[in-house]
Image: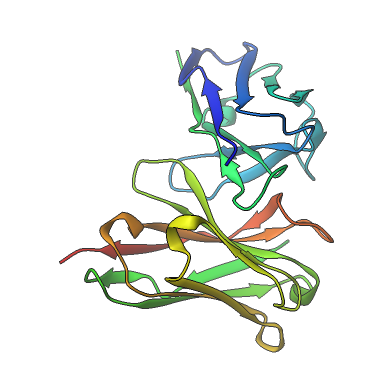
Length: 108
Length: 120
């Protein structure tokens, strides 16, 4: 099973700042990595898939990069609605699909 | 926009059974892989199971193999999860999730979830 680790666990930033979230895989997942956003009391939402492709309707301030074992989600300028928990997920080697433990982006 | 509505959650004793349902609308249900993903209270996401378009392929996370069964009825646009021999660690919000067309793995549409609590 591929294990995903995310860092940092919590990121405290102000609106307008740049957010950089990291996800590392225990073995190569090629580009088969996605990012999800989850707000309290809501279902997750797919943001990025195949490491760098934005899902339908996702604003351009969200971008993904990386391949192999190291990946990054960047939010170029935080909007108030971006404060949430972000999960990475792999589909390279399944079952099972696995998720990282999440990074919480909160307001500084 | 994709609509997925889960139902069937509730309180059940350890060792008991529960059947979750997911009603799909606003897309051609029979064209997509479907999944169940769960989230224990205050915890992260865990993929549970998926099923292909015609139900001929089903996969599970090891922790539920032999206890849970995923199924679908394309005529009723519905997805199901039969959960038997429930344990306290199965307590979670269970989400129904639709994959992107023609592939599995990227969960592009989600329901709001149904809470399953396993407790005596």
